[in-house]
Length: 167
Image (cartoon, rainbow, N blue to C red; front, side):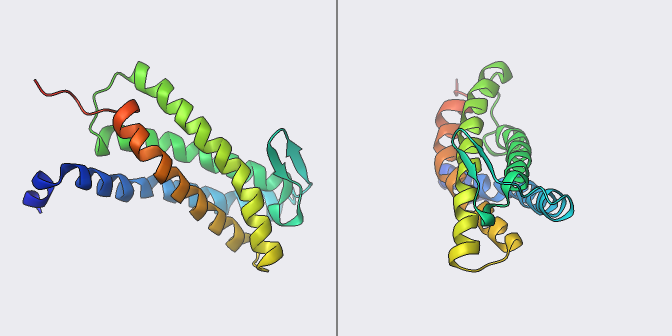
């Protein structure tokens, strides 16, 4: 294993990125389930919600409760992910004052996309596919996670948390 890591450091870093991203993914899923149970099921916060680019107006999107669920889940997942990626995957000593604002830009991009997309994905899953709200929310989280990987790995590796320069 050690030889593989030495011979393929970039591949190993991508593997670690994906494996350790599961810490933030687990955070996202758990908070999605808790949020759906709390905001949608217990508090019945299902009134249609639309604000700027966010559209949670269809029955399958869970309204304001769906929006709040994904907002909390995404923000917390991004906070967790910053520290996991910086400290464990990229082992970057990049200045926090420089890397954190860059990561915030990436996180806002990811959070905005991940707040827009679930309304459409859950509506498709509940309306077109006939799935229940919990399963639809889980599928929306999977879609969000895959999109985040494709966008964030290269930006983290080369812009936000570049490897320390060797002397």
